[in-house]
Length: 129
Image (cartoon, rainbow, N blue to C red; front, side, top):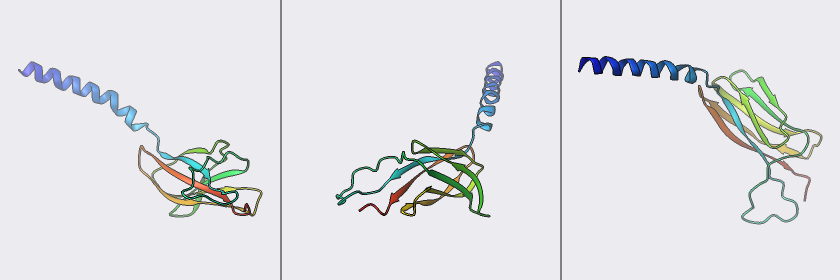
């Protein structure tokens, strides 16, 4: 009985030693997508799912909320983005360069340790009628 208990404890200690480094090195951050909610012509209700923004000039900025410091910038070409960040709260914003007509979203996102938070943002061309 005691031998089985010692063996079981040894196995559990070995498993914990193997798993601990994997958990300790898991990154955290924010990932997500930017969709284009521009509605050319008359809009229909309910609207169809918005496509990912895949045009030029897309910028996603990550600002630490407590001091408004810009900590990361991404320029996705396929609408998807990902940034490794420390835990905390961030303002994540999407914008499109080269036009006064484009408006983008900003969202506040909380990053937890060893976890990627997901956020969807949108951009819209307000000059399209």
